[in-house]
Image 1 (cartoon, rainbow, N blue to C red):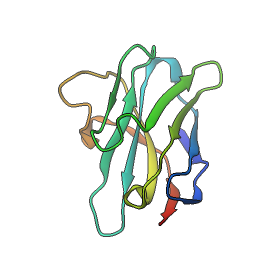
Image 2 (cartoon, one colour):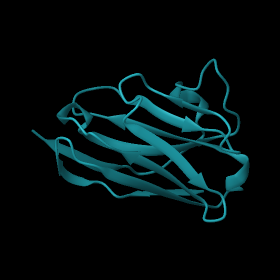
Image 3 (spheres, one colour):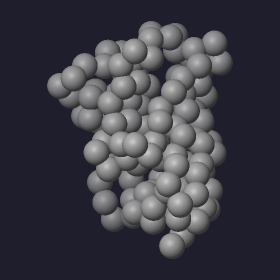
Length: 125
C-alpha cells in the first residue's frame, strides 16, 4: 500500500493550498481517508476524515470552516482544500487510511492502518 501526499508549499497567511493524496495497493473505495498534521515539536494531530462513500466527514475544531476534505474514488485520491491559512497551520500533513469511520474514535491515530509520507505546509505571517 502506498499513500503519496503532495501539494504542500510556502504560502502567506490568508492564502490557500490544496493537498492531494494518491493511493495505490488498496481498494480505495472501501477505506475512510483522513488527514493529520504534525508541527515541529508537537504530536501528530487529527485534521479531517471522510468515509469511503463521502457521506461522513469530521473536522478538527481548529480547521472547521476553513478546510474541506473531498475524495475522488475513480482517481483513488483524497484532497484537502485549505483556505484562510494561518501561521499555526504550519506542519507536515499526512494522509492516512482506515476501514471504518465512526463518531467515537475518528481522531485516533491507532485506527489508521496506512500512512503516507507527509507534505510540508508552511504559512508565513
